[in-house]
Structures are given as structure tokens and as C-alpha cells.
Image: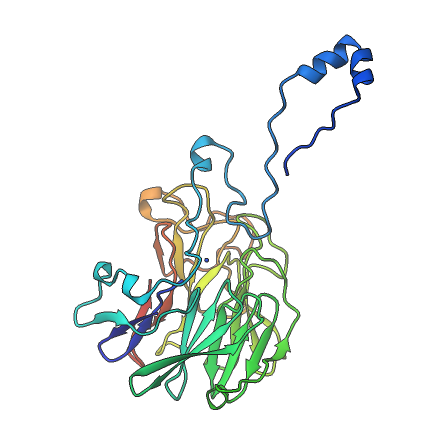
Length: 347
């Protein structure tokens, strides 16, 4: 965890058989016909690779020599020590500085700040939600919840911590008053797909007092089901599920514009096509329930690629061009620069 300060802001640091052949008896070998003998001495065929696990980022990788050399970089097995973080290589905007706020939290993913100053930290791969409590400059890390599955999405609203796991959403009321003995989260919604691929979620509360989250496409590139590739919203008690937007591959950060009150989100596009296209996007929802952002029919690319965004003949597809695009180095976060500033930051 890294602390970026002019006044106070936070940035993450941390950290993602063989073939058996039984030899026939000797007598059988002696009586084998010539064809069988030739078959026994034939060179072994190449072993087929084991199937990839559900959700693997290698699914869809082309079977070419160049593509076989490419693979995601595995995360460190343990959190990096504070003195091993390369702070000197990080660049901050003018007027900001970067220093370590807390360390030792494995696979830290989403940060949320409580009303009483507690920093809550989620994880995409691990099973815990952590809380960082600042007591006069001494920071203590506590476990708020454990035994969770893909608890990537968290949000705080009026003292309640909401947690989005792979297939359910839960909450802990008055969480900052219970950090020393937190209760088990109360599940408020369970009817979500269980696909590992793009199943981890981001979570936010809108100006309408509803929970917003996404169900990503369960694939690299495919025709998603009616339940996938959409943004949804719920009442705070888990009732009233509604579709907000569709045609979304996977979201990696969302937040609300403080002035326009519109939902902005980053979207990661398909893998294994090239190093430059399709570009990742920064989108905004302007027509809740109607907006379609194109997946899997079309995309928005820069002028240098000469690919149009409205490339589908299906009515209603690609109803919303993106707010911004960038090359395929992943857009990984989104937030507001300051309350009421009207400035959105993506990184």
C-alpha cells in the first residue's frame, strides 16, 4: 500500500498427466504380428496439453510460436516488504509526493475510506478484507472478513461495508465500530453467475442510493448469455435487480462524476489480437437501461487504426461510443480527484 499526499490520497502497492503405457507380457510380444511390432516401435506421439482452468488468461491464446511465448506475469507469492518497493521509480504529479502508507497486505486491490478514517482493502485472489487503522501515526492492519471468494468489490455507505464476491453480495453494518470483533457478513443477494473468467466485481453506490456492479463476459471473446456482460444495480437491501447497461466485456474500476452524477467506468477489451488493438476504454453511462457499449460486436479504436466503432448491424448495439481510449496496457483504476472538482482520474 502506498500513500500519495498533497492532502491525502492512496494508491495500491502490494500485490495475483503424463502418459502411462503398460508393457504387454513377453509371450504376447513374441506372438505379435509384424504390424503390431512396428506399432510398438513407432515413436511416441506428442502429449496433448492439459485443459486450462476456468478463468485462465491463456484461454483464447493463438496456437502460434509467437503467441506461445506470451503469458501474464505472475504476481509475487508474498507481499513485498516496504523497503523493497521501488518508490524512486514512481512518478507523481507536480505538488504530490509518494511514500508507503501500509505494507504486508497480500493482493490488495480496492481501497475505500471510512467516515472515521479507516482504510478498507479488498483482494481479487485472496479471501480477506482488511482494515488499516491509524492511531496517532501508528497504523494497524486488522482482518475484517475472511473465507470469502473473490472479494474484489467493496464500498462504504452510511457506515455499512458492502462486499461483492464472485457470486454474491453481502454487508457489515456499522463496520468501523466493530473492527476488533467484526461479525460475519450478512448476504443480501446470491443469484449471480459463478464463472471465474471476469467474474470478480467492482462495486459502488450511486446518487440514487443503489448498489452498482458488473457481471463480465465469461470469456476472452464470445457471445455472452443474457446474464453476462452487463452493469446491474440493486436496492441497498438486495432487492430490485435492474440492468443499467450492456455490451461490456469487463470493468476494472468505476466511479461517479461529482457534478454530472453519471457513472464512469474503465473497460478492458479482448486479448490476443495484437499489442495495439482493440484499445481499452473509459466509458460513461448517460441512458441507464438503454446504453450498449458494443461487446462482442464492435469496439472503438483510434484514428490510426481506421476501425469504426459502429461496426455492427444488430439494432441497438454500440449505442454509446467511449469517452476515451488507450492502447492495450490495461486501464486499472478510476476515481475523482477531489469532491466537487469535476475531474475524473484513470490509471
